[in-house]
Image 1 (cartoon, helix red, strand yellow):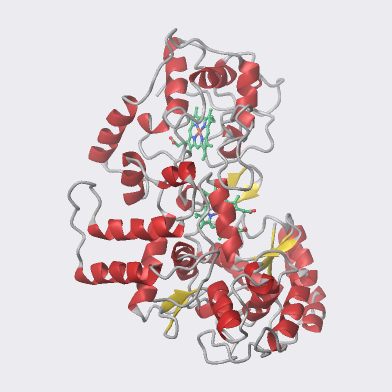
Image 2 (image 1 turned 60 degrees about the vertical axis):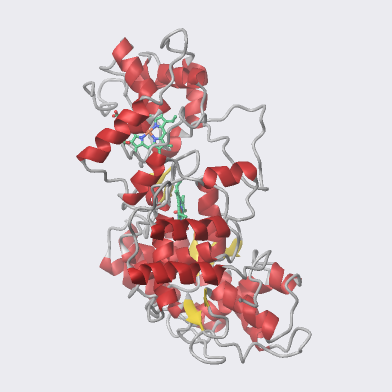
Length: 238
Length: 282
């Protein structure tokens, strides 16, 4: 087939795969395949993916496989209609696991660290994770976390002043726990990672972060001196 | 604040670039300015005034010059230059060739991006072995690959991206790239859409280009570019690895069809917008 080795290895098989994609595309064969729930075209695309990431060792290769929610959200480009939204939400709610002792806010200082630290989840030969070091949620990559936070990202809404108005009521703690553990249970096809579901953060870490977000004396909710800009929006419970 | 400075820029820049690379008909900064005029409020395009000022002295211009020497030098076991290599517009025809890649090549039966095509020619024409450092070493300003890619790509400066979609495999690759672009996976549930679907969003301090705004996207995909943060020139393939790293997913095999498919799709998204080559990035 291909006489060329373009990478660390030769890929003689690939043109055949793509010819397969092409034939399917031309024949319009896209009905759902029995068993896996993938259309014939999707299965060809997945073959290209598998082959292009082919040399990934065990853990990495497993991470490549999509779960049901990743697949469904990819298909609709994160805009699920009402029916799909309902189905995903129900399924993801059932996937949340709660601590034995109930939802008790943890240590806000540790929580701050986990919210700002982006450590962990690395793959590849470059810099694998140190198992002794706890992972961080890297919340700050996507969220402004505090009224004085000048480096937070904007993919998600600002969380400055998040706890003002919410307080530490059980319903607030539950909302924050669910949101971090499994954001799709709150907003199906959310862009926010499911930190608990994937085991990326432990349940205790999530309770620590919840404390950081909700406790009134946390820097998240620090009331600014009079005359300065309002810290954040006072939000009603969803 | 930034705009008055920008408008004054082209005047101040009349000399420099052409002193380096005399085949560049237009100053890459001017190409970028044309694009900015169409979307004057783009946070991504305007994020670094300093980079814009520095583009005149883009270190990649030296890499382009080195690449020119390499391209015409007789090298490899066969002791020949790359002048007979066909990048899609005929042997040795470089003008506008990169702006029309990836494309289908009959002699290999594959859709190839610039890097794959270059590897092909280095091996088939010059006789380099696959494990020769000239072929193997893909990254870093000092590598033959960065030099040659930078030189070849610079011949498409200012030319609108126009990847061909005539051959069915070219369309199949573009579609596979679209599929991969939107494919969420991994323990952070991310796809390229997560970070490149809205204008002006930031991951921490980095302003993200929006794949749906061709003017932002043409700069985003204009590689090779000098990456100030890395102090090296980088390629499209290197950018793909970097973004998979950010998503905490395994990186694809360099040069695999998956990566070329992504490049086919991302080039299609910038269709019609001028390539900015060489570019300079954060």
